[in-house]
Length: 209
Ligand SMILES: [Cu+2]
Image 1 (cartoon, rainbow, N blue to C red):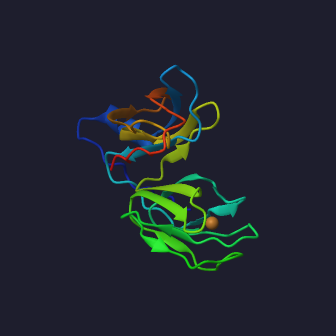
Image 2 (image 1 turned 60 degrees about the vertical axis):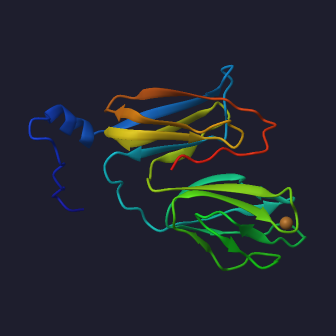
């Protein structure tokens, strides 16, 4: 490991600001609905006000099991490629009409070797041409700081100190949550987020770009 580290960029008179930029903070985002119940499977994203560090190219997979995509909701960094294995005995034909990534795979069984790149930030909704009930969402972001809430509605993210935009999305939310005003320091903090959720809603909310 190199003994030299890049000096942090600081405001000339801003020592406190500088320190906050160097130390990582732990943020617990807690997603609840209008009556205070935990909301699991919400996508939580922190976008740094300054440029996000570059990410490595990675790959993930979205399986097809019992005529459902697994997982149904995925959040990835732009530049991630996705495999779409088919674990069912029936064939599937995966497609997306979303502007952030329009593609169509041929009808197939088994696991195609081809990976589908997701290079553009945005929301990508996928379906299957054979099975109308199959739907999956991929939220593509340009930051390494993201996660999905667990069944307790919680996501813990470790991020460098600084200013962030917080975006929270759930498939059944009336509207995504977004705020520009999150400041993260070295101390652990909780960020409560409230979403209006209707489990019967058939239309997913827009993703705040
Ligand atoms: Cu299908």
